[in-house]
Image (cartoon, rainbow, N blue to C red; front, side, top):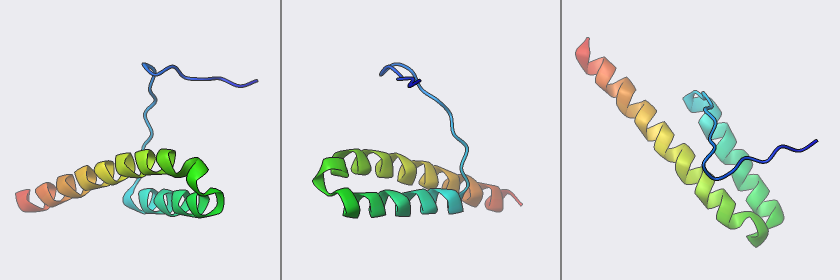
Length: 67
């Protein structure tokens, strides 16, 4: 049984920096294997992951400045 999410639906996923980097590597490998068929989706998700990683890094830096 497949469940499809509509465009207005969303989920939350908690990842640490290492998990974000590993997921980006997996997306890169999938893109190399499948080529242009997955390239657009790969760029979309990689950007989202990189933005989340940047926010995580900024939060860590801010926390370091407070101590």
